[in-house]
Length: 441
Ligand code: S3P
Image (tube, rainbow, N blue to C red; front, side, top):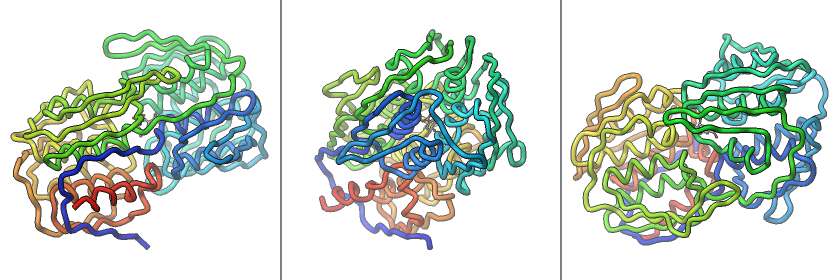
């Protein structure tokens, strides 16, 4: 049964301090790297969401122990060749593209075929984008419709390094090949369109043989086989993508101020901040620190008097890829027409997100002109809703749900939003934090 939540009222002005749960990309990477390490790796503030639990279950199936000790999570790694499992293994990546794609890079030497399955949404997504480069290492793949899950992977002990040109700006494709390179003798070369670089920073922190040369529009990455991975004690900073919902709420509710404590502000993730700053929102990073190669800070947002439209530079697309739905809400209140282009990757997410962005805006009565990869949004600074809006059948895409909640609280109207459980993939306590803002009025 679809769990429905309704909203009938905008929130009033607020001044608050919040924290958001640990970063999803870092949490999944910590699980995967720790599963290859020697010894006990410990994490604090690990995101406990369905995507990360799916990653934990995946490594458990590969014979790696995991325990929760008070506020700490422990993975008992057995080294790079420590996976032990029986034939006919099936790993369920559930809703997680990051898990489903990254883990394949670690399985390119598997002696038995392993089947990877996922939920309805993940089963619609493109896995050929990772099976193609990984098969060049020598692994064999069988995919449903040549493209989708379920897939089976059969590895080889005779891996060959590869040259790979990553053109989509996909960190999942890049990371999957980096994992392949870590397992393979010889040098693997990647020319990658810019995308989040958490995997590279993890490798650097761990002292693995990976080298990055930053060029203007792409990175050149060279990887050699890793000999050993040291255990990783990590305190995961807050997720900027989860923060984005509250950054936008603050932007849209006048006379408001918010501080979000201890957020990862890796430069390859802060497209949302750069875009909103261009639209006139005041955002500051306080108490900036470097933690294990990653930048973090408290993020302070002050709602602007008015919002400027934007012709969004496409070079920010990858940096803001998970945040466009909420960014579109800001454009809906701008004084003028905003334009976003080359967003074909948005329709490759948990749902066809560009299409959902258009739908939500149109339900709100906001005029849009869209193509398969672009959207023009006709903003209205006085936008206020009083009609009924129903959001359902969106493949349980967590970001569609959370964006709709932010729209309801910012613009008013009567919203009926289905599939409340969708938030469990990335942000299980989202509605608890939302309630703190509702109590305000
Ligand atoms: C992620 C990469 C992005 C992003 C996803 C997380 C990662 O996907 O949308 O939510 O952790 O590497 P793509 O690599 O497909 O762009």
